[in-house]
Image (cartoon, rainbow over all chains, first blue to last red; front, side):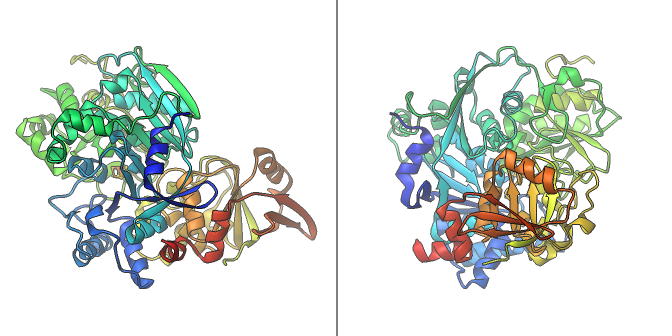
Length: 430
Length: 174
Ligand code: SF4
């Protein structure tokens, strides 16, 4: 019997099994941000355990509310900043160098195939796009990760998705994952690793694969996973070129982190997405999804492009293509938060930021921003937002607000048209 | 160990997420105590009034997928600060469930028909429960009439509850 990627990674990182079905794994990376880490730090200090297992394996960023909006968020940043300094954590990204964790850390080359990664953040599943096992955990698990470099997980089950066909023009990874979640249900992946495979995934960029894996948690999944291939190696090459004599050698090494054909999958689910339409959500749960076509003409008050799901350069380029030469409708306001400084700078150099700002977008600094309604872009009671983020829970973007999740192309089309608009029907003339 | 008995709060809905348990805007708090007044503030269930209905309750009974969404441990903390250390549901989101045990609290999953039974028989009454983690039994006290339901939790979960959480256990063992 073959093994799944997750089983291979577990075996490779196993410290012990203290109880039946419980695997304590050695961690390759512990990621930290200013919302869930300061309280862990404070608790570790109170316990007299102000230590880290390995400062080089810990990466920290201020991203959720940045620059700080008030004394409390300033305090959270301060605790993280001082801790990084005190314990020698060199990879700490402060204001000016900071961006959304799940966009920033991959961009810095901190995730590799076969890695185990944890973070006090549910969208840590994003990093599985590199062929890693990456799981969101709570503060207590984070404390133990920081202190001992281990984390306990139940033996993994895996659901394998095979995405066949070719995505039509105007249809993107976001539409694909919304469709997958709508079929699986928001509880359908609980306690499972969700593997995304098939020709559609093979043809995707790393950015698109991260969009897929990012939303694994919206179906309850522990980690998303894509198999490492030449696309993965190309993305990582600047960081690994001293480790391998050639890209082919790197690929050979990384190819051990692929599930065997005869592995024991909990389920294998095939979807042919050749006829997929642009999708959006319509309620307060991520599995309430329908084609945008059926939602057209629904009004929204705000459009938001950004987040760890769809705030990367590829997303900005796609949206800019739709926006070029157009204006944001008077019926709504539109906000762009590029996910990292590097994305911001590249978009600036390529003239993309100008397209957004000429169209009438408010362009913010890199931050989680409106995604979780903690700092800017918060909705008023009863308002609606067309958003490229990942979560549409009641109150997520502000008390009483409603979020329609969609792709950057659809969000851009919606911004111009002033109501929910199908990106693939939108050919520039509305 | 924490207190695992008391009056029961029934929350008749599936997929209650961590934003509903404790909204994101309170994540700037850096003490657990500060979370106390905001538990379930954004939860919309007909007839449910967070301030009134949470008082004097120590155990929650609910439906499927409780605690889905964000990884915030603020969710179990907000429960803990209101003296609620037990949630009984058909099933839980992974991170929330682990966070509960990591804090020395208990997340009990029992089959759908038993949840249904609890709702049908008791949700309109004032009842109390007590949890015996050794024997894995929920005892229900309905004005003196006693009823029991069995459950199963893992050895790891029990160890965490007994040893006061994962930090102490892991620091000793790894
Ligand atoms: S962008 Fe949104 S989902 Fe992503 S890490 Fe930030 S708050 Fe979480």
